[in-house]
Amino acid sequence: MNLKNTITNLPQSPGIYQYFDKNGKLLYIGKAKNLANRVKSYWLFTPTLHPNPNLSQRIVKMLEQTTELNYIVVNSEHDALILENSLIKQLNPKYNILLRDDKTYPYIYIDNAEEYPRFEITRKIIKSPDITYFGPYSVGARDILNSIYEIAKLVQKKGSLKSKKLCLYHQIDKCLGPCELAISKERYQKEINLATKLIKNKKLLLKELQKKMEFYAEELRFEEAAELRDRMDKISRSEIKSEIDFASNENFDIFAVTYHNNKAAVVRIFMRHGKIISSSHDIIHLSEGYDANELYSRALLDFYKDQKPPIIAPILIAEEFEDLELIQKHLSHVFEKKADISLPQRGKKKDLINLALLNAKELLNKTPKNSEEKLLQEIQALCSLEKIPYRVEVFDNSHMAGVATVGAMIVYENGKFDKKSYRTYHLEAKDEYAQMRETLSRRVESFSKNSPPDLWILDGGATLLKLAYEILHSNGITLDVIAISKEKVDAKAHRAKGKAKDIIYTQKDIFRLKESDKRLQWVQRLRDEAHRSAINFHKKTKLRLDQESKLLSLHGISAAKIQKLLNHFGTFETLKELSLEEISTVLSQKDAKTIKNFYN
Image: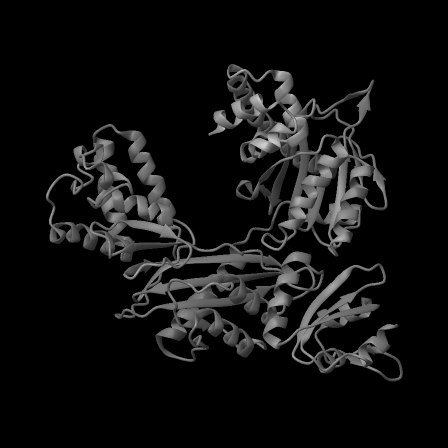
């Protein structure tokens, strides 16, 4: 069925629609309350099928490339919203705007129902009758918590009360010692009140930490002083400075989006008890144009997800957007009460919006002209990539004669390695091809939680490149992939900087660039970092396996039997979970009992 027939025969039902180009690449995912009406609004049918010129330049450009349309019918417009958001995060279509900030923000909480309560960190609602929450915190939650225990004389550890004996914390005057001493609830409450005051007032907290730091420095306790200095820096960076004073206990979540040229900024500000407690932002590269509706929708959906937040605050936004009513209905369902979303026009609420927009514009101005921008554009042109590779994932595997087989993924974004996003995998596959299949497949499975990047780089040749595309296509994902293989001289691979004549493979071409070529050096640098990560993880895994093997050997299980078990079951982790009967299928009943007793 051709495109025109598909469009004219669409059902009048809620659902999502997907546009594809002539090569089967996914261009765009949209949702609709009425599929027929929504999709038809994109097109004019006479004299021939062509895009509606009244649409944005970005959408017209997308429609001009469209040759195929698929759709999925769902029960409601709300279901379409959720499915659309999920698929965009997993498949990262070319003309949709992807917001990668999908983390859950932590809160500090205290359970006042406990006899001697203490402060903890959570990312979800705690089931207890008398909980007080503080947050959310974009950064610095753990630093604030640690600082509280540095200043207030609270029970420091969960298990301290169970011991019924005074510990080191009491000796160094960091705990009142209610585990053994008769500390009244009134006396302990004074420490709770102090901690609460410090959590709510960061200026006061930083002032107290400054005093502590100076004391440690005078006592020549420089390591402790340096730790407090670093902690103060993190706490300071967690908020936007403002002179706005609400003189009330009002709470607000503020969202603002703005753009300039090919970048957009999303700013979130969290006000609690009339004070701004934290903020966060994202810079998004707009390869195919700006869409306020997509960015606001994505920012709200990704922040609140489908989990009721510990603190539900009224939401302030900087501008109206098309799906506002639909997002409000969704959040009302999540909050289990009507979501309060408003666009302030005057007063202090408007001042908060202006503050968010001011910071968003400042972020766009401050974002440096990335020194790699030109290089990335050259790599895009050389390798015929769909997108400029701002975010890249690089893969390598490592093992020793089939033992301690691991995979590693490193992440490179905006000119630096994003080490928090690195991932390592224990692998069961024995050969290089199967190992890469296992590594890439496991990464694809996680796309729903951690969206795909702009580019994959593999440490390997044309065979592994083809494998990667097969895995992606079988999952309906369009993602650029390149591979880099080491040149072999006399059957030996050379990695030496300045001497390696590595080969770059793309879907269409093979490149043998000069050693001095900046594009080659860029790919080599990323490949070498992935190789380093894989090797380090392999060494740690091998050391641990050797230690377990030695312990098993001491219990009478020979190295040959251990290898037989690993060949059959894959890893020691798997072995720990096996039943006596399962182990007995490989070794004798006696050996199986020895192993079970060892792990128990």
